[in-house]
Length: 296
Image 1: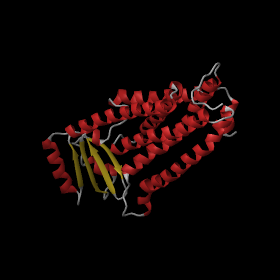
Image 2: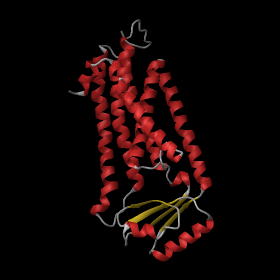
Image 3: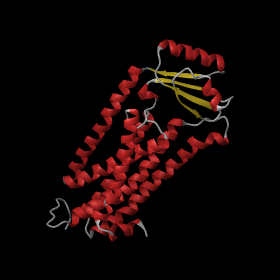
Image 4: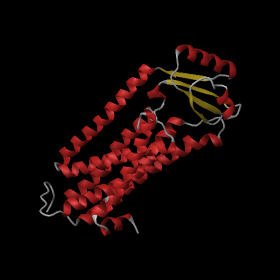
């Protein structure tokens, strides 16, 4: 059974139980992470502060980690022919000792330090810009449609996309970094595009609501499919290219961004064509509807 058939076969209230359940599961995942770490998603070094060191992978991962046993090593990963080690905040003297140890043990290491003041500033900016983007999006959508329920459906669908993408970060181990914040902001804009496409077709065109939704699906699936087809090569190149070409390393920023985007795009398909579409079905079919701007 195709998604187009599901749209019209089941009552809106029945189908809306599925996205509600997914949102609840996402909130549970984010809440559990918040209780254990103090943040809904695991924060990267840009937001926590600390030191990032990249060294040649001449030894096993466990052997390399053992050499830094006296320091706050929070993560180590293989990025091809090198290991990337992330350390939590430490005193200036500990950082100096860590840098000396690294330079003495490894050839040509890369050491990057992020101070706590800069990290707190980035956290404040992220907490400020994401809510502001939602508020501005809601205002623009309301100015376009002048229908509170329609505007609310667009905002709820975009919020569901972000919650699902953020929960997927906890599942896949992707940390919140400047790159993943950018990916989340991109998802907000993309979600609005597909939801406005659907809402415009339903409110501004003639015909039965189910037929207008099905007609919008063709364009919507083409948009999302094109975007996914561009993201998939990024996932492959950033995660697996170093396995084929040894001189390459894993591109962590691109890998994390593309992972967030692919989960967010998958969530957008569901939330646009189930959450928003079913909300519009209910809204259009309710008794005594009086929709401004609808063609008769």
